[in-house]
Length: 314
Image (tube, helix red, strand yellow):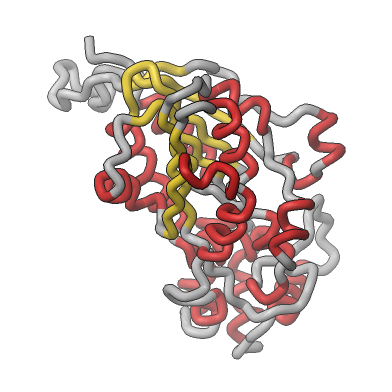
């Protein structure tokens, strides 16, 4: 897909809600940790004009190219970095970008990544089993499914895909490897699940599990959240959009933990942790897309937005 087509077809998820949650103001400093095609970043820059500054991060080099074209008119106010948000503190130190007045993480996979067959994310079209957000680094999905033992593969699919039939799927994969393409894998996954009624495509959970494992998504998210709190100015907002239960659980638990002065286990009568609350929840209820947004952008249907605000120590 060309850059021009990507810019025309990209639809940011929960765009109005995320900008409101960030409380974007003119002249302030913001970070978009997953800049993707630049939709959220554009809205932040428009709202923070004049003199607002945006640091845009993405591990996908193609996303940086797309965002640079989209945000060309704001090039003087924008710094784009091709790196993982797991390195958030180092990036901000390198570019002298702190304290920050708002941080956004729009997790998961972008439409340009999903729509490009050569990236290997989708089971709807044939392509190499890659699934790396940065196609120049790390193991591919093919490397994983063709080298892990049956039990290791089953554990991975169950842990990251929450797939009940992970053992059957792993057995089918191991018995038919090597597997090199997305459609080959999708067919292998369907075989042991025939006759079982499912609301989603049989390969959905397996592909999700492999993508999470390839990109170390959950570990990177935990690292980014803890670093984000340190970078936020007081009364600044942390906004996270997640797309599946494992991500949302991490975000929910992190925000809840950071609202408490003590995180010792309940059975310990006297606090020994020394933990001090750093956040307050802005909305205890998770924010989800409207029916209208889901109708116009079906990929937004699983999105969940959570928002918290940095507070001063008591």
